Image 1 (cartoon, rainbow, N blue to C red):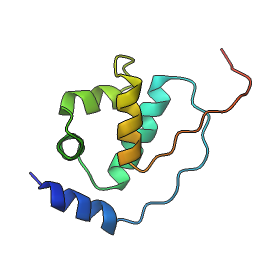
Image 2: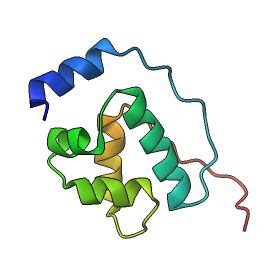
Image 3: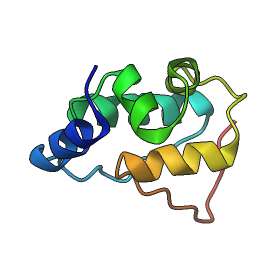
Length: 94
């Protein structure tokens, strides 16, 4: 298992492209985006869990779009993945 410092170094060394604006309509879409970014950073789910102080199970549930993860947790994980969430008014599609 990688150490906290190794994970931070790995993330700094990777040059990840900024994410394009994406319409997100459900938790599964958020999970897909966060999973993609985690992989771009070179982290396993276990690496991400260690780095952020969460369980691997929580990271897995979030990436699979389970709606049980607290929004504050989603925001913290997104920040650690260098993902910016922007809320704006618009038309919702059902």
